Length: 314
Ligand SMILES: NC(=O)c1ccc[n+]([C@@H]2O[C@H](COP(=O)([O-])OP(=O)(O)OC[C@H]3O[C@@H](n4cnc5c(N)ncnc54)[C@H](OP(=O)(O)O)[C@@H]3O)[C@@H](O)[C@H]2O)c1
Image (cartoon, rainbow, N blue to C red; front, side, top):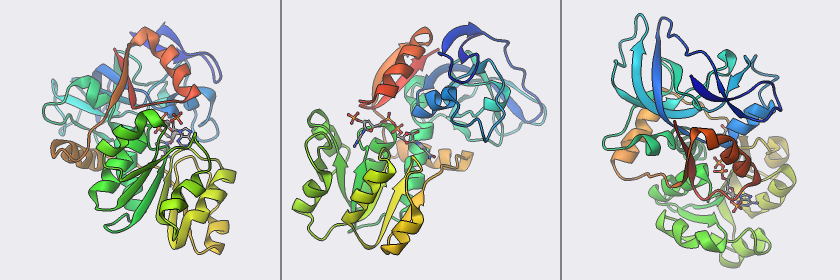
């Protein structure tokens, strides 16, 4: 089958041919129609997980995808042949990914039926960004009346975080360059601050002199987090998806600091499906590319400037 893979960590992702996987007991074979791009995809190719996971090479890239159940292995009962499914398919140990014609999923993994009326290219954009966003907002206990700063709000995770935080009744301040101000407002942000136009602390404090309750940060390094954390009131919460929070130093300032690690499950994805069905959550697709152009899309994501999700048509 055709796939985008790396031959070793650090190699350039390239279109290649790899054997089609066979589902074992408890697994489904999914014929993919679309894959969703996440920064984790190029991080995995770089070797970000090399100390944690034994990868198989060639390593097909891609975590998120949507397609049709092509074959169900022995003992599979939850999902059936021909069903439209989407999910997070973590296959690094077996060299499998979603930038390919087929992939495997454990029946009890983070895979679910696609939301009603959703097309494959939309569904593929959802899993990691939306599951992470839901977990982030819940881990921070975001609630009505709070003020929440979302840093990295214009990206895949950030856009979902803005919508879900706003849906709790919290006041959301989103970081956004000028071209994304209106979009952030439409997604539910009460205000925006422009991270390319001067000091963020000054911009936030100009309208909120007593600070904010929660910071949900998708981009900052440790040094920048130390600065942004000064915006939090005592008792506030700072979550980082890039593992850049120093929880001890925050505890000393009476702030809860959390390095967030998503734990995708089928139940969580089904909750995401419900939020999409209810119209509470939507994903913005910035760009669609055919499989052979996935390496170019990965290179672009590395540089930054995401305005929504990139989807790969298989
Ligand atoms: N730990 C976990 O479980 C977990 C789960 C999901 C994601 N993540 C991580 O979370 C990060 C974000 O993921 P994503 O999918 O949302 O990425 P993305 O779609 O590529 O978006 C990143 C966004 O951040 C904005 N940005 C960059 N620098 C910024 C800055 N200094 N201040 C404010 N905004 C800035 C970018 O816009 P501009 O370039 O225009 O500034 C872009 O819109 C990635 O590192 C990903 O690996 C971790």
